[in-house]
Amino acid sequence: MFLRRSLLPLSIVVAVSLSSMPQARASDRLDTAMTFWEARLPFCEGFLSKEFDEPKTREDGTTYFLPCNDGDTILFSGLTCSVGDKRGCDTVKRSQGTDGRWWRSPRKLREGAADGGSETTFSNDHAAGVWAYIAEERDTEAFRKWTRWIKRNDKLLGFIPKYCEDSRCGFKFMDCPMLDRLAVVLNVANPVCDEAPLPPLPIILPSPTKTIHEIRNALNDVENAIKNLPVAGEIIKYEPSKILVEKQLAEMEKLSTRLEDLRSRIMVLARVSADTTGIIGRLNAIVNDPGFSRHNIAVNAYLLQKYTATASPLTLDAVRKVAAIEPKNAFINFVAYGPSPEMVGLILDKCRTEDPKEVRPRFQWIWERADNDKSDPPRDTMYWDCLFTAKLYKGGPVQKVSLPELPGMIELYKAEQAAFDGAEARAEEGIAAIKAMIKKPTVGNVIDAATTLNEIPAAAAAGAAASGAATVVGGVVGGVAGNKAGQQAGQTAATITKTVVNPGPTVRRTVRRVCRRC
Image (cartoon, rainbow, N blue to C red):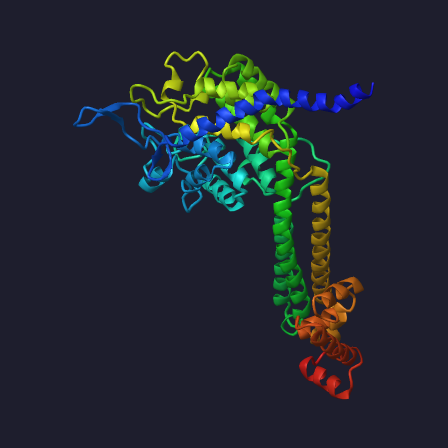
């Protein structure tokens, strides 16, 4: 009995070791293969690229293939970037112009070809490579520049955004949902897709710009009304109230910038919650042609898994359906089921580890080709495809990430909206004070607006004091020169107010000279 108990832990260790041996051997084989592939990677001017497949002959009779077949560089580079290979990240980054526009490669950017030829300067397929780069590197500024350029660019049919200036670059149904997901990852707005339909929201999102415009118009109206008064208009001192209103308008402008940003981010989160990406992914898995179209479904699902917490059940269903149709595709297998010894077998079945007898072009990204492709794509692998899936396997399962949630964003919006509403109320009170002077021009408000300003609630005065003025009038006199200056200005203003309300003989004589009928 003792012997059986003492051997039990040993038996467990042996069983665990035996079960891990196939995976360890597979990993060792993959390490050797990765060294082989690394030594044969094609480049163009230092960035990731493939070769042309048309053979050329040297003077000595040997065959070679021209480099810089870089028309599809962005997609493959972005995927390579997503597994931590900085060479892929650098290739994508170098392909963005200073205006935010993305091109097919750094070389294409430098050449600056015009749209309208046989090849567009960019495409929807390449956008996924940019998404991967931006999400992996968290390049928020690149995303903002890119979306601003797309927003400025002419729309197809007047409303469909485009990735380039050619009509063939128009967005497809998947582009806005994917851009929205990327915006959520970065916690920024996506202005390109703000006109897309929104699901119902538990809050109204008014535009603060309209409110600011209305307040400014109201201030202009009362100023014009004072100027049109026959006599009193020339001597009514409404500047303190005007300064108060303008100060609140400046505060509203500042708050409106944050509100507009939050508003757009909430709209992005709301669109993401509708899961249009998963729905469209499922449809495309049914209707798309074999090969690269199904590869694109796997790419989208992979990006959703890696960067947006997890892909929706609908999206996973779509990619697993594709995996059933293309069972020998190592990349699709990973997206559908994660890393496994079977995945290593699929990689090594497609990716050679010995040089061929005849020189072949490094031309194919084999994972975008159908299993039954008769042209034998693995024969012309570019090796970047093999290295990508090997690093994907080595990286292990996709790690979950946490993203902002809609309820929290809405509460933040409410807090900012409350601050905006407070500034709006104080601005309206200042305008009301000026209107009161127009309706009832008394001795006090002819000489100074201080008596009218005293009617503004204490909350407004407290708000002014917090920014460096002891009272509203003190803030007008003393500006925002700090608490001490504000207190001194407040005392001065109090003295002025007292003098106006209870004028002495000298003041009364001055008033009679200014206004004979007062």
